[in-house]
Image (cartoon, rainbow, N blue to C red):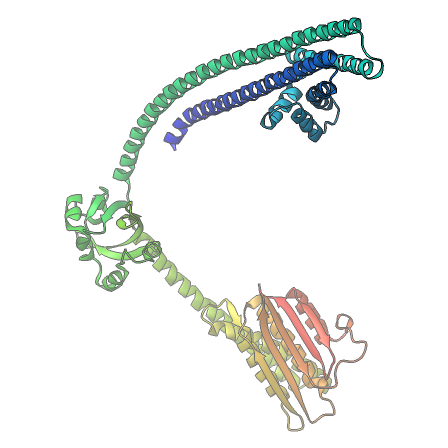
Length: 580
């Protein structure tokens, strides 16, 4: 922890400097890419200017020859050459529009005899530098050149008209020749200015990029030097912290009550053993290091030795690491002859090839914990016995109450006796829960299937007569619940079964009752159905004024459950409630 905290400021500074290094490096790449694009675009325009000038000069020459010879083919050549200049004008005009059509621009530059591979750079330079003064000046020369090209085209048209229509005199020839010469001289100046200023623009940008590169390299060199100094200082600080940490770690190992060891798998000898082995076993480090695993195994308690031999692991097996995750607990004899309980926690280390190499272990004396657990187990068993006795006595007391009710029922009138009989049945269902609890091992849960099965037999025995033959069909799956749920379920079962026996088969000689219990996705489903006369029309269990259905309703709510009922081929009640 301390080493990490000490190195953190150095890490942050280094990360900051490295980030600056990366940013400057990226800037250097971007600037040089920018320079490359500008120079490439400038070269493309200079090359294009050469084609433009060539076409203008050839057009001028063709017009002069036409003027001298009056040969129509020269005028045709004149117009063809000027189409080159027209292509560049079309491209520039479209670049100046709000929504330029790049297909028109490309076709225009191609018509101007520009290389197709240079057109993208020409478009990029124009769009990104048209607002830049020096480049704007270059474009102005271009625009002026196109104006004089139009004048040249006009002179050519006039010459052609004179020759074709009226003929041309010597004086007119001289006048036209002078006009052509004047236009050519102006165009030559504009062409020279165009190339010169474009070269100046490229030169300025190259010079700027050069100094940016120099500045960036100086900054990068400074950053590298600063990083080196910071890293050196951080390394020295880290090294000091590591040494301090090692000393603290050594102090912890030397003063720890636990024994830390490293065991070589191939030789069975200890590579390292912490000094606390002396306090734990009474043996010196030298004795244990020399004796190896055999010294410890020879002193394992006879009752544990068999288990320990089974725990010896084939470290080359696939499940070796998973087995080592389980702590090993056994008794070992100290040098003075006393046995102590120890807990051995182990981790497998592998070499650079992935093969098992050694075991790192942590051994702790757990004798006090074992004695505490044994005392706790004894106390828990005593409490379980006491709780079982309580359940047994509750069951007996409820049996006594049931017997007193039986005595009272035998001396009561018929209607009162029936009510007492129902009370007695409910008491017995509760008593049966306590009987099942003290018979179980955990004293926490009741097996509902066994409980309901015995409750069915008890109720059946109560109502069994020769006049009415009732068959009970059971489908009871094992479901464990605590006493808080077992008692309401027992009382609900008691009420529903009593209703079946009392009301379902009036006027019949036989009948069937089906009882089902199952668990579906943490929900318990309990149902009682008969093939008797069914449920009366307009029956609503929530509004029923009978004690039995009132109890069923209340107890179902206590279970956080729901009631469903139907009256198809008899009556059926289904209770569902969460198991937890």
